[in-house]
Amino acid sequence: MVKVYPFKAFVPSQKLANRVVTLGSGKVPEAVLREKAECNEFSYIRVVKPQYLQPEIEQGSPAFYQASLSNLANLLSNHCLEVFENGIYFYKQTHHSGKILSGWIVGIDADDYQNGKIKKHENTLKAKEGRLVEHIRQLKSMAEPVLLSQNLPDDILTLSHQTQETTPLFSVTDEFKNEHSLWFISDSNIIDRIQSDFNQIDSLYIADGHHRVAASSTFILEEFGHNSGKGFMALIMDDRDLLIKPFYRLIKHTQPLNLEAFFKVAGYNYSDASDVNSYEDLQEHQVLVFSQNEKWVIQLNSPEKHLNAVEKLDVSVVERDIFSPVFGIENTSNDNRVSFMRGDTSIEFIKNQMEEGKFQFAFLFKSNSMQEIKDVADQGLIMPPKSTFVEPKLLTGMVIEDYQY
View (cartoon, rainbow, N blue to C red):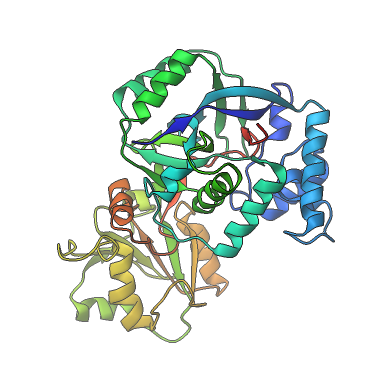
């Protein structure tokens, strides 16, 4: 039984929303974020990354937190943010592909994470987690929902459709032409329905934001204790609506290598891939492999039943059966011959990078299914590094949970 709660929040004013909200770190280049911080006095990036304005301050230092607090106070004093008392939110993203990505922003019981009802598939770095806990503690707020997913009850989906027929608080468009819209729900009957519906669910899966889940739940338990009725802010989406994309694995290998000869000797079923231009063109258990001048699709065998959920993943099979014997790469997480790039990057761009000598071989996989991710989490295992890139990517400062209550 998953417990969800309404929560108090700061929300950008309708007139200034497009100036306040921003895509954050890892979603746009750092140079773009720096420019936003320097040129837009109301950008929430100033709260999250005050060092962009004051390069002399060290991240995690008292001066860093004081600058964050000062920049947040500036937004409040200039009425860029409005206070919304206890409620929940509905979020919709009209993705640039045309797909609608939507869900409910609620508070998630911190005890549910500690008790394993909020299931993870990535490890967290303790140092990063600690910095996030302290940032939340100093600001008494969190500026971006984590993304959780599950197969949601029909009643929640019905409420979602009904809500989209009403007028949102505001809509803003990001750098990638994705439109983000937000609704505020204070009707106690609807909130009761949402809470009752989520109480039917045994668990939720983290789709994005492992460090923020760990940090915010730690803060809540330390600040308010167990069974406090406080929750960390999360966007919960139906798992059928997520956009799950793969990553390239890019190999730097400067020695002569006939990869096709290895495929033949190893008995791989492979073929010319001139008509494959995206991970979306790949079929089940297919892997696109290319160099500057050659391009193949290899067909992997279906995984053996006795393997665990991680061992069954296509990327695990390739790392074990190709990367190890061919390149001598045993661990992609700490080998400097391996780099990663989002799987929706064009093949033409990758080949241009090859021409510059940055790497020599590229491996691209079909996206993991949500069921594969669930299986990994259910078995208490961890996905290989850079296995999935999940959308929607949310805006920082669109909803800011306020813990000062």
